[in-house]
Image (cartoon, rainbow, N blue to C red):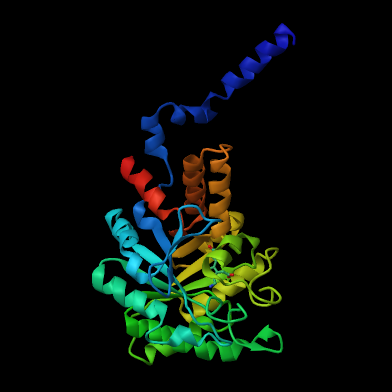
Length: 338
Ligand code: PBG
């Protein structure tokens, strides 16, 4: 390159000295001052798998560090969650008996109802949210009642109402319906308001995609569909405008919190919701997203802790006020170290 060109480059650069963004990156002090987003322990919800039975503490192979517990074994996990000052858990139940309609979901003495009572009695400060669905409870693994090879929307709604009232009676703090039936939020609001639980909030899995990222979860929760897929009720990953429609319905029906799921491949949707709705926005950093980080870190291909922090931060930056993640305990440890 000619001497002349080098000089010209320097001249142009100097002329632009008002646009030097690196000035505010020079030291950790200034980087801290101008940092736009921070993760805090208060952002996180930790999912827990509770299996009916005794003496169960089963590692989930595709989700290293995550286990299924029976209630007699779960206290050491709950002790840790409370000691780390995590605000909330999201419960998934794995019943010992499944049937065509998932009737265990509204058994007042079912695995989830027992888990709610146990946690609220022994760990009253922990905020307990339940996933409201049927796929772990039905013999066919779909999220509702089957009519002619598909999940029947309105008949499923009736059972959702029974399920949430049963969770409410057991003392749950918030319910989170994940089945993607139309009219779910209106149904639940009506059911709760008419049974004396008008104060109980609803977190809608408002924009939930039919995603391959749920793979490890379905092992964890025994909830794979035995035929077909969930494409007739969960959303097409190609669709963005439809996500707004889903969220609008949930907003109008009175969902207190709107959720996007999965998180990482749907950061655009998180931002859409944040910009549009005057409600807290949650996202679900799902099992496959967790498994990918764990697997690559195990191979030594990435720094697992840094990738965890960076991807959770990206969800926050996209607009999530609340992040549901299997990393919650790990991230709490990192945050309390800093
Ligand atoms: C449905 C439900 C699923 C997840 C949360 N609730 C699975 C599904 O829709 O098939 C997935 C969570 C994850 O992958 O971590 N009850």
